[in-house]
Picture 1: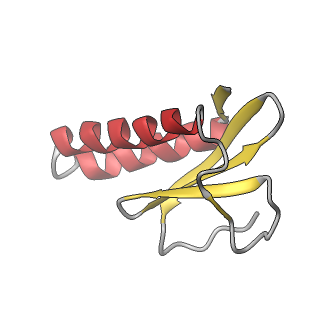
Picture 2: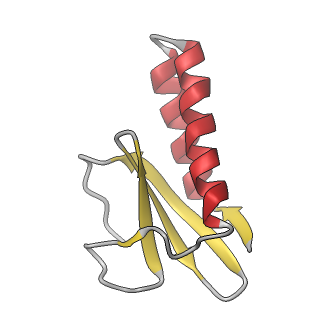
Length: 93
């Protein structure tokens, strides 16, 4: 299944990388790689993430990597990653 990172998710990841890189550039690169690897896994198992509790819509799902929530929408032809942010932050859908 095709995986797409929406602009909002790409901006989230750039912010995450920049924030971590202030203290440890290598750790920043590792975290982005971990996020991308977890998303790649969704290509084979798109429904492996849990339904986003705030939405209760089966097509809106999330996976957790470290303390980051990766939110995505499953359609028949693609997985659209629309947000990546720290789990303690509130996010409106």
